[in-house]
Amino acid sequence: MTDRRSRWVRMGRLSFALLLIWSFAPSRGFSSAQEKQEDKKEAADKDKKKELPLETDRTISFDTAEGSWISLDVAPDGRQIVFELLGDLYTVPIEGGAAKRITPGIMFDSQPRFSPDGSRIVFLSDRSGDENIWIANPDGSAPKAITKGKNTRYWSPEWTPDGKYIIVSRSGAPPGGTQLWLYHVDGGSGVNLTGSEERRQLNPLGPAFGKDDRFVYFTERTAAGSVYNQMNFRWQLGVYDRHTGENFRMSDELGSAMRPVLSPDGRWLVYATRWDAQTGLRVRDLKSGDDSWLIYPVTRDDQESASTRDLMPGSSFTPDSKALITSFDGRIWRVDVPSGEATAIPFSAKVEQKLGPKVQFEYPIDEGPVRAQQIRYPRLSPDGTKLAFTALDRLWVMDYPSGKARRVSSLDAGEHQPAWSPDGKSIAFVSWSDADGGHVYRVAADGEAPQKLTQIASFYSDPVYSLDGQRIVVVRGPREERQEDFSPQGRGGQAMELVWLPAGGGDTTLITPFRAQGRPHFAKDPGRIYAWEGSRGLVSFRFDGTDRKTHVKVTGYKNPNAEQPTNASEGASYRCARQPG
Image (cartoon, rainbow, N blue to C red; front, side, top):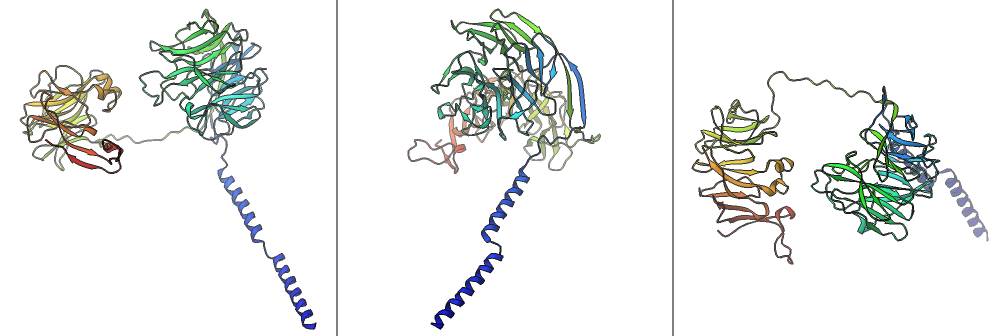
């Protein structure tokens, strides 16, 4: 009994001691949680970005009565216009007059729209450090961010007719491309309206409502690919049905159809289109479906660029649906519908912009010899003792390997792609001038007045002497197309041809249309011209283009189910195969 009692006493003392140790020792779990919270706070402090961190130290001020790319909207009561000018928002009476700036500061505010009841405006602003959707009172007070996107782009916000939501074009977030998004005026994550897989390439811009709030009109992109230097137009009107989730094409204009604007009474649809290198506005009677020109020309559209401010500036109908208020030629206009009679709405604005420090550096200008930073088309002479090359768009020759370069021609145009004659006494080269085109020239290797060999200006490239030195083979193509796109797969590459001319000058003779993926050259056979044609391999043909042969092809992996191996440019491992002949 005594042993059992003493055992319980010892156990009690041990438990009490452990309890004391646990009480005073720092809790591992608690410490870990606290450390995580501190780490999160530290990370948040590091990630916190100062809003518009540019420190201003200069101010420019001036008065103006015009502007460019003015997006605007008319108040629901028809009494005033809100518009953007140099990154600030202004209001002006509908009749015109002195404009009042309502959003001053270094932030860039744009694309304003009145709410249906006129109590607020929605606009885009980068005042948070990233461009987002903001709403404010009509006088610019009480601004509030609706979105908090980072590295996200927005275009052309618009109110839903009930005033509860903002619909906007947005890109920079899954599922990719540009989509129409719907945001509640109190904020939130938003709803993607057009993000399904089949609509991935719509890239809708410029949402607009008419009388029926069921349908959202917009501009959709009809073809994918780069918008720069495009050769056809790829924008048409579309409409999104908010009840069914379906979208429908609403135009098929040759010069595209962009930036729809609908009248409040549901009668008129105005949109922009390109015609004869200028942009105009057309009006569609939604009752009959008939289209006609409203006014032409107006502000040039932005189809060839990234369209960061939409394809056209924002416009608006008057509340009575009798006129369109729009901007072009630097001014704001009232255009009666459907007559197209335009009346200017004059405005004057006092602009005041704060600027950051002047970025100015002093660079020394070399007044002595200039060091060429790029050497192009180096060609060794047949005996290997001289090197011809182009630098600073001029033709030079030097003793190889360490001689002093000397200019051997005297043209004012660019001198490119030298080619040595077999005896090393002459150099053929091509010239180029944006104004006059190009020719093939010949000059003595020791320098003299160059001799023009071709009779007709064109775009010549890659000259090469025949083995006997009696002919020059050269690539020729249309000037305009090769200026626009010099790549073989581009427009210029689709119209190239290989020609020859006498080494002493004269008429050119067509050899063959040319794919131009490699420089023409000669091997042992003086009667055959060799050239690399990409996936077709190394080919050769005679001076009349006949007897074409393939000598070498480079291919990649061959899938067991494929008839042909992949092209070399598509595979990870290559093999070289010599063709018969």
